[in-house]
Length: 86
Image (cartoon, rainbow, N blue to C red; front, top):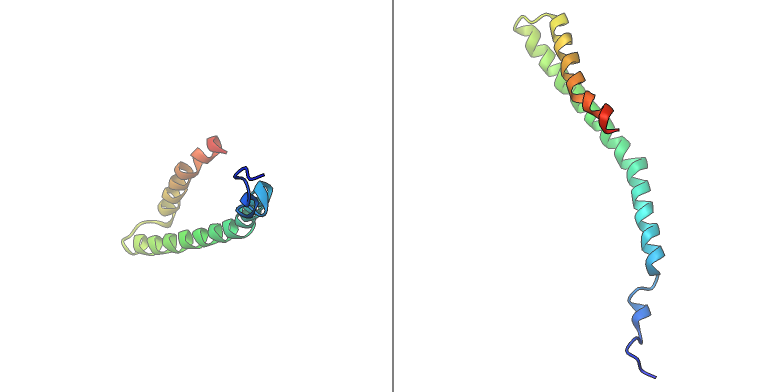
């Protein structure tokens, strides 16, 4: 009997569960390896940028205390929405 479904199992050899497992493994890899590395690189870039800004600001006469106050104020404004999102 030729009902037109002959050979369709060759198109999807592993089935839907195999694709879902691969997707879950890819997400697991992303969260375990890629995300921490990206966060570390972002933190180091932020540190370098702050050091450059600090050097430029102190050469122009800005006080260390004022620079720290501005840094804490900006970081508070940037991180405060994270409290409501997460």
